[in-house]
Length: 104
Image 1 (cartoon, helix red, strand yellow):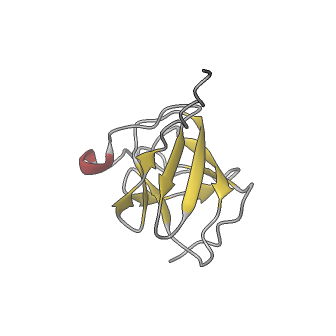
Image 2 (cartoon, rainbow, N blue to C red; image 1 turned 120 degrees about the vertical axis):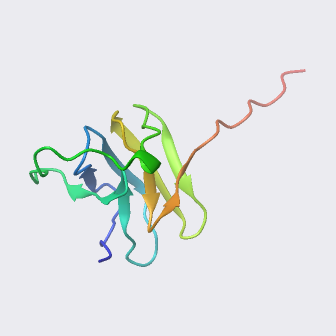
């Protein structure tokens, strides 16, 4: 089941403490996952006793941006957790910082 991800929408993991904000949304609906489980809109209650799939438990870091090129999406982590972020089973990677211009 795909979600209608929009820029500014907030999501939380169903299996850990991770919370994110969509910075750049894909043009088509996509399935945002954390810990191998679909994420829920902030305000939804997760299942009690759930934990991330061990294969998807590398964790998220607060303040880091995660991205995927196809579909083009960028996510900002607002609360760290144990689960890893993915779109339909494809892992998101930490977005690198832009190099500063040389000051000759």
